Length: 163
Image (cartoon, rainbow, N blue to C red):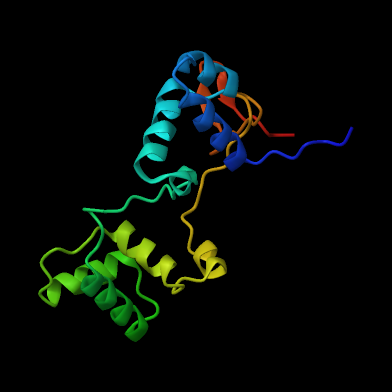
């Protein structure tokens, strides 16, 4: 017997057709299909509103972004960066304020805008990464000692590395 190929849409269609029957217990149906009751009722509501075409996956991207940077300001950031390719987010932020822009985003947002527009090369960005201290996987895996010469004891001088 060959395998029966099942798609997400065919499963949703089957769920909706069974869920619309009056004698079906919807919570059990959701359990059988492995979805939460909230999701099951959402699919049934969508089907009743607009039919099968509403059962497809919708993008997760929000329809509205109230905190998104103004496109005109984003264009100003890009134009200023193209005039001064060595400037980063902090310097561009300062210059935009000096030019009279009121709502200037944070330097990290400006850097994200530059990345989005392909104005920062990843290899060049790695060169300017801040120094990171060396770390080891467990305490006492690396011992370090600062030696500045001899030091006094009651019995005289201690020369730790004298031969």
